[in-house]
Image (cartoon, rainbow, N blue to C red; front, side):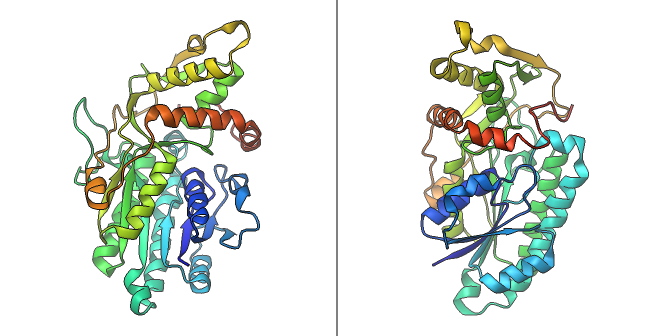
Length: 349
């Protein structure tokens, strides 16, 4: 049975990956710091499952990481652990550098030392897969897409910290021969996403009949990727990706932010109408734009599709409908994660 050390496996993308991997028969050692966005409720289905070992800890704790590697002897490390919200990085960039840069460096050093001690097939087959973002590439104009050779041009403290971690992963491959893989994904959405991000935030506010804040003119474009498709792409890269390579993962679903908000409004109006039948689009409120807000992202996943045969299985229409239905059915989960310091207020102004 293959064993993975997954970092950040109680967060949004990491937890979806863990749930998928354990369901498919893999054994997962799940290391998560349980910051505000890490939630063990997301992993409730795995309680008592001997293929899932949860460890509360920090990737920057090198002693703890080294102990976990020695004890569980994983076949691969998948690094999701990161501070990930651009708005929060505007308010407090230091924490992003500490986790995303310094923490990743510590994890890489532990992985290198562990890998050096392996022998035979275990050494040959070991992989360190680093999960990153398309935001490291900066902002696109009206045409074109990000490819794996697009120069890095991060524009926020978050994307700068992720760019730095990407470079460290590359450096550990070229300097120490550590067998690494990197994935850079477009904007994820789906079940278990913390409500500070656009889609779950709009769902929560629209259900409550509150104003729906849209930054600037609402014309910023993102390529939307359903989280289950992202997890399947990571699994595919882990099993067949070429060592040292980067693979871009996108959903082929470019949408303006305003169009995303209006789509959610229409789905909720059909499923859960407001009293009096008011259309939720009337709640859209334009607010001051985020500082340094990138205008457009779009991912070219051609390399991943051609080399490894991966394709997204969800259109934006099917994925967003499934996401809205999930949040409607899991309001108790939403209320529990909102019992902390975040109450859907504006960040990063």
